[in-house]
Structures are given as C-alpha cells and as structure tokens.
Image 1: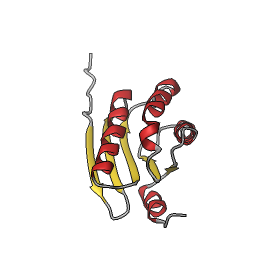
Image 2: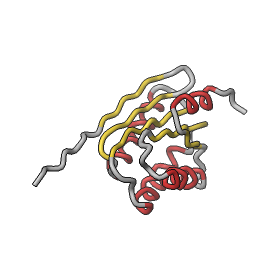
Image 3: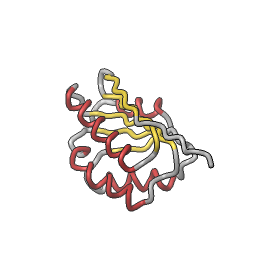
Length: 131
C-alpha cells in the first residue's frame, strides 16, 4: 500500500507598491486555506496595504461547498476591511463554478474580491486608481 505524500503548508508575502502579493501552497485543506487567509491578512496589515493579491497554489480536490463557505464566512469580516482583493487559483483542474461560488459568497459578505485566471490580470486590477 502506497503512503500518501502530504505537501506542507507554505506562505510567502511580497510587498508591491500598491498591494501585498500573498502566495500560499500545500495541500488543499480547510485548515491550510484558513491559515493562508489569516497569514495574508496579517502580512498586509503589518505592511499597511489595503489591497491584496491572493495567489493560491494548493493541490488536491476542491473543498466541499459547506467547508468553503465556513472559511469564507469566518474570514469575511477581515476581508471587508481591504479596498480590493484579487484571487488567483493556480489549480486549473478546479471547477470554475467552485471558484465563482467562493467569489460570490465573499462579495455577499461585503468583500470587494474578484477572481482572475492569472496573476498578470490580477495585478493590473490592483494597480488601477481608486474609483
């Protein structure tokens, strides 16, 4: 019987002039996604950034919608304090409907978040002047 290889959670934060670029990787678990949102929030607040790029490189199947919603509901109050949050999921095997659900659920809780297919487009939106 083969042992399952787990990828440990990893977090990197890179400050750009107008936003914080937070990169998360590891297994796609409820705990890792929750920790990524906490770490990204803390890093942005510490650096005085009100725009955030969430660059997700988590592996594995999508969370069920109940678990995804629970993480979003818990973290939305912190997310609502940001002017803009761009969200990019590097896992192209994930259903676009799941990503759209996450975007809509967060928006319905007062978070100005947008889903992007790539980091270039996300950066462009984050660098636009405030409207």
